[in-house]
Image (cartoon, rainbow over all chains, first blue to last red; front, side, top):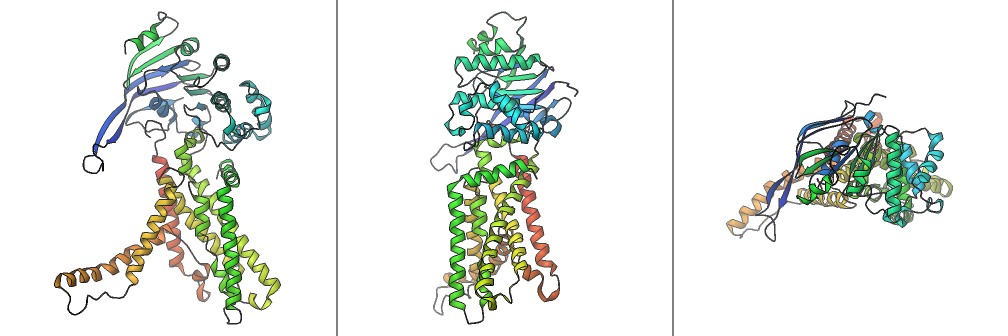
Length: 250
Length: 267
């Protein structure tokens, strides 16, 4: 399978928000345009771990949504391996862990992974072994495998979300705030898993507020503010604390 | 059709006490109606009337509430669409699952009643066409399901789509009712302004009813096989209208979901 990486070309996205300034909101409703992304151009190489950081409302999640084809940009475009992210062939190569985990909470963790295994079009005969392999990988204890997801803590949900994202052996892994809600052991485990996957050639795109996690995992980081790409830091060559300085100067 | 999504949808229904109790309630109501109708009409020569009581509208609404809107509002849809599933496939699967589930339940209802009369009252079964009833159930459930899926895609949330459907359906009923009313007369000594208002109302009435008819047919798209196969010939007009409305509803649902922005920012 040819991997060409991710190419983002002049990506722009604006949202129109209706602001209401009186009680009834009929006569004085105004539409305000918020530029979530202002012409972002960047390339992510195959096998690279790429971080996206920025303050709240910087446009990180919108960028992630455009990368996954959930949001249609107003201008510019995204190509993954030379194809649009909405192409079925590309969907087979991606794994996604969303920022806000939403599952059918009546399902058990086991059923949830089986559901995604089937959705990913993986061979049926591997379903049981793959499901158990990924549950083991994220260190969810066997007692929790058949519990309803509604009884899971935030950290357990995040581990399950990671297991779900890894199903289908994706070439590209998109993680939106993967460390949120995880305890320190969970953060260390997640980093270990991601580093392993990176060594196996997986391209990782990580959107996170946890600078230490980004620094320990990523090769390069895009610094985004108010929808603009301010800089791309190469963490191998940049000075220590450069990411912190970005936030301090905010 | 995506079997995994269809199976998960059915699983969801089976785990929802509200859906299960709704289906059982409708099932009970239908059987009770049949029994009452049989008792009251027995010997009058209308033995077949009870079988016309099956109306899958409420059933489709119970099953179809939030069928797509729930996934959009809860944020489940992005996770599904990050897999190799197209949006059109997702919508078609939801429509087919709803159509099939509602059809199966309706056919089960009809079969129970047919079986009952076959055992207890052989005289009543002579004029019944079981296959016609089954055909009507399938067509009606599929037509209604298409509209319910379209409304669910239109309004994210568990109940918003069905709510909007109910409002529009009630409005169409009201408009149709207005059209059927007799000519309103202000009386011989009425004020000229009142007469003008009445005249305007009388002028508008048929127009309102004419507008309501196709809209109601679109959002509550049903087809009676008996009507299509009258007098040993196929009547193409009701069949064509039904297929047109069904296709239009499904295409609109796909279009809405295709255009839906699923990022958190867009919400």
